[in-house]
Length: 392
Ligand SMILES: [Zn+2]
Ligand SMILES: [Zn+2]
Image 1 (cartoon, rainbow, N blue to C red):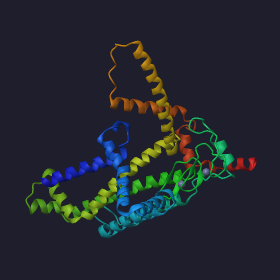
Image 2 (spheres, protein in one colour):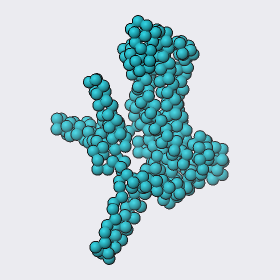
Image 3 (cartoon, protein in one colour):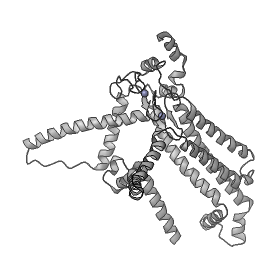
Image 4 (spheres, rainbow, N blue to C red):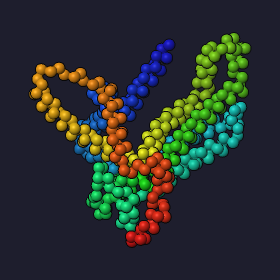
């Protein structure tokens, strides 16, 4: 019983930390302890760490922390790339050493030894392709094509020159301070890839996330089939009912079977839990990016829209409060309207803002065209370079 309570508490704490970390800055959690946990996890903890180092080692310690931070966060570095290779390699190695001896098994044919190797190989290939491909660097040679391909909407993009590259900044592009170059249709700088995600490699990036989601699901299903096969081959149910006299019902057998699996195959179960968790994260990440691709928006643009909308909201709030002040002076003594609940205003606002973005996004050309643009970037098409030879 105590163990069950411990497990329940552990699950609740994990959930709280995950929700706080991922969603703690949503408007719905404003002013709650979830927002405070989010602040602590994303900023506070690191700040305390820095102060602690300063307290213990003085300014030399602080400088060392700053230079490590600068190298890790502000300079191109392969640390996360090495970490990705480490994680995928270690997981595959663990699966191979712990479970390949059961392949072929009762439910799994011998081909899966080869297929799993192939699946991981394709994953690494997609990783290399995303990491080392050109994201769509804007140069003086291709800038006229990007300028004509993406008109300025004069809402979130207006005519500008990049102060570092000294060339016009096409709409949808951004100067990446880590890579020190302007990237067309800039999405974000990906630390895991040590590369920008932009006009030319969003397709590889999307394929990478989708493929890794599928590998994780494949791993969970294959390991579950191995365990089910072991259960069948070792006649566990038969032994439990015949020799241990346990009732032949799901309710009576399930705890015994789970206990046996946890004892005999804990490595496989831990790997399955890890893969399930990663697949959930990847599913969320893929859904987010797929939604952006379908509406022809980038992560960078979605932040710009948020900024634009919050600025607009502030302006309209200022107007409304000025009007309210005037009205309250006019109608002193009238009853105030009850305040709208936080939940209601949260959903109302996000829905309206979404409509606002959909209405004003000039780059959204219908979802089929949008998908086409991601899979076949402009700069890979012949017309793009034909324009160049005409203009140059
Ligand atoms: Zn630039
Ligand atoms: Zn970059």
